[in-house]
Length: 527
Image (cartoon, rainbow, N blue to C red; front, side, top):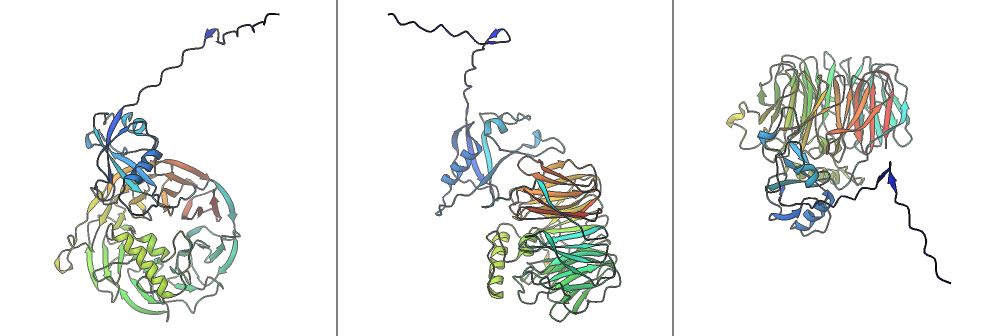
C-alpha cells in the first residue's frame, strides 16, 4: 500500500495578507574607538577597531582586558562620549552615556554629531565594586514625632537613624527592626540639626534654644549638661574627622548669632570662638586637609562670604567674597569619607582607635590623591562656586583672596542644597526652581562642567542625598514626593510618593532611604 503524504499546510494570513518576508539583518559598521581614563584623559590602550553594535557589557570586558594592571579583579565601568560644543543645546546633557551600544546611543543620537568615520573618544569611569539596589517601596512608616521632622541622619554604619523635630525631641530608630529605640529629651526648642560622631559613639544635636547637646546612642541618655554659649539658634554641626582625632573628636557649631564655636567633647568646654562673620552663619564644614594637614573649618554666612579657618587655633586663612547674596549651603568632595570614617561597604569594625584612624586616613588619601579637597558653595544669588583652596597653584602667597575654579550657573531661583557624590566625581545641586542640576567634578577637562538637569519635581527641591556607589541620587521636595534618579539615563529611577505634605529631609544608606517632613512621619524605603 502506498504511503499517503500529509496535505500541505495552509499559508498563514495576516488580515488576509500573506506573511511578509523577514527583513535581512542590517550590517553594523566598524568604528575606531579610543578608550581614555575619565579622571585625567590618558589613553587606556591604543585605539581599536570595533563593531559599532557591540554591547556595553562587551565594552566593559574589553576595557578590563586592555588595562595593564597586574591584578585580576574585574572593575565595572561606565562609558560616555562628550558632545562637541557646537552640538550642545542649552540646558541639554553635554555627554552621551553608552547604555546599550555605540551604534544605538552614539551614532544614532539626535544631534548627529558623530559618524562611523570619526575616531570616537570613549571616556571610561570606574564604578564602585558594589552596587546599591534602588528603593521602590515604603517598608515602614514610623510615627512618634508630634511636629514636623526637620532633620534626619543615618549613623556611619547605617544601623541607627536619628531624627530631630519641632516637638523639641530627638528620636533614635533601630533600622534592623524598624522600631523606635530611644527618645532624647532635653531641648526646649525645635531640633534643627543632628550629627553623628564618625565612630558612632556619640550623637550631637543643635536646637532653636541655642543649645548643643551630646547623647549616648546606646542608652539614649545625655552626656552631661548642654553646651551653652550661642545667643541664637544653632544652624549646623560638624565633627572633627577621625583621621585627625579618633579618640576625642571636637565639635563645631554654627549659629544665627554670627559665630562658630568649637567644643571639646571630652570636657564639654568651649575651645575657641570664630567671630569674623557679620550675619548668621548658615553652615559649617570640617575638612580633613589644610596647609599642614591639621584640618580646616569652612563657614558660610548670610554676610555673603565663605570663610576658611585653621582648625588648630581658629586663625582665619581666607575670606571668599564672590557671592552676591546669602550663602546657604556648602559641600566638600570628601564629605562621605569624613562622615563614615573607617566604615566602608565591607562592614568591618576597627578594633581600636589607632586602627580606625589608619583606615579613615587610607580612605581619605585614596580620594584626595585623584583630586584635592574641593569645596562648593551655593547661594541665594542662584549660583554656585567651586573652590580648590589648598592646591599649590591656586593659593596666593600670604593667604590672600583666592579665586574660584569656576562659577556654576543655570538655576533660575535660589540654591537650596548641594552635595558631592561619595567618590567625589559628581556634584548635585537642588534649587527652588524645582530642578536638580548635575556637575562633573572628576578632574577630566574643565572642573565643574554642567552635565544634565534632572526634571520631575513640581515644587522646590529641599534636600539631596547620594547612594554609596555614586550611581543614584535621591531628592526631597515641597511637592510631597521623594525621587530616585538614575545617573546613566538622567531620568527618574523610582518615584516614591507617600508623604502627605512637604518633605524636608532625606538620607540614603546601603539600600535604604529615609525621609521625613511636615506630615510628622518618618518613612523608610527599600527595594
